[in-house]
Structures are given as structure tokens and as C-alpha cells.
Image (cartoon, rainbow, N blue to C red; front, side):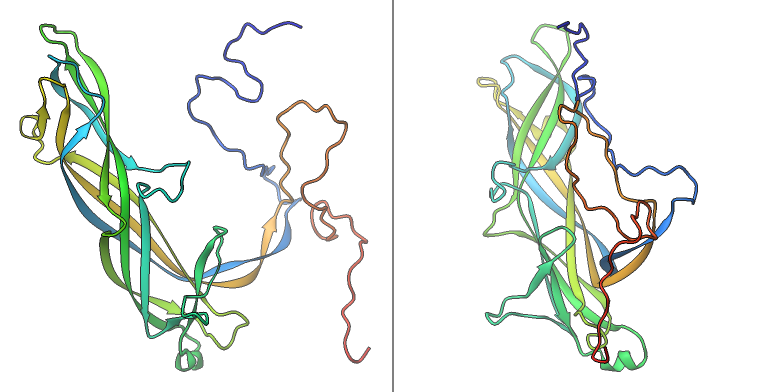
Length: 320
């Protein structure tokens, strides 16, 4: 067996110098319409949606960064300072994980509840119990063939921590050689027992709750980014360096930028144009002559790859 001299060539991995990657959807189209057919899918339709951008501030005085600077180190300038959400993949319930908990109350409608008084939730497109059933008196607007407005109060609770990184241009004492070092710190935004709360109000449109087999559903999701800066934008005022230990503490202001979207969704059936099922190419050399399928074959004779002539259940009625 011969060994490759190319250190960057690893089967299934690619160039080890590549720090990022691109995805493969498995959807290829030759640009023509000869293989395009209609396919029915059972999905959720967005009936109405609203988007909000909210802002919050967190002061973090005397934030200690690690590691400590060496004794006699001179800080020349700040090369970069950045902030990102803290998340511990080993414990999703870690109190330090930055969490956004939207809490919404409705006026003019209500969330359907269970016998214990808790909101009844159903599975959303994210695969979790993220949707609530909504009930409202839609009779008046149903007669007008319009939706019914529902008003809401939104309280967004933010807890957990963020990670702050700062790149400093430094030089040793009695030297002009400059280098860049990176220091990090974990800053708590708010504890679980006392969250940071952002509030706003909204109006959203609800379809009929009578002329449908399904009650409309309410879902909301948020995302957060953070921007960090020095409290007074001055190294002399915001930096405190212990000459004995080299410990650096910095006064910071963290801006929290929150985007929240709320939707009213209803289950629907759609006819979409399709070029067929996704077919991915395996990335490893095959030792087996054949492999099992992951999805069943399409038996609709009008679809791409359809077998045709397949069995079709016969509808029955009382008259038969």
C-alpha cells in the first residue's frame, strides 16, 4: 500500500486548511421544464406575521479578562473587540447559556389551555412544542370574509451570559516589538431569578376558528446579537491593570440587539412544482454491492420517477 505525500488530502474531509465549508442540498436542476411535475405537500401556511427589533443595554464595570498579562507589558491599542452568545453544548440547561424567553399575552383572543390551566402546545416546524392554539370570536369578521385582529403584550426575558473577546496590541517593557494577544471574559447579562425584560405591544390577524378543521396556531421565535464597547471609549479611563499580577479589568457596555417574529400559521395542502426526489451521492467507497433506500419510491404515475400502474385505494361510499 502506498501512502500519499499530500498531507492535506484526507478522504471525505478535503483540504485541512479550509476552516469553513459549503453545504450540499442534493437538489440539481438542468434548467429545463421537461422533468418538472406537480407534487402535493402538507405544510403550514403563514396567515399573518409581525417582526420586532428591540434593544437593551448592560453595563459591565471591572470585567476581569483572562489570561493575565505579563508583568511590564505595555498596551499599545485595541485591535478588535467582539461579543457572542455563550452556549455550553454539554449542558443545554446551563444557567450561563444565553436564553431568550418570550412571554406573550393576548387581548381579544386567548390561548387554548389544558385541564391544568397550562397552554396547549403543538409541534412546530422546528420539531418542538413551539406553537400554541389560538381561539377568538371571529364571527363578525367571518361574515365579512376578513380576519379578526388580536392584540398582544410581549415580554422578552433575557438570561445567561455572553463571551467577550478583545485583541490587544502589546509590547514588552523596554522593547518596540509589537504583538497581538487575545483576552476573553464571560459577562453575565442577567440571572435566571432576575431576568432582563424587554416589552412591546403588537397586533396580529387571526383567521376563522369556525370555518376550518384546525384552530389557528401562534408561534414566536427570537434571536439575539450583542455589540460591546468600552464604557467611555478610553483605554486610560476604562482599563485597570494590576502591575503585580498582570490582571486586566475593563469597563464595558454591551448592547443587546433582539429580533422577534410572531406568526399565525394554519395547516394547508399545497401543489408545488418539483423536479423529483433528492438523491445524494455517497462520500465513502462502497464495500457492499447495494445499500437500502432511505425513502420509498414515488408511485404517482404523474411524478418524476413514478412507477405508474401502481395500486390505488378505491374510495367507498354507502351507495356501493
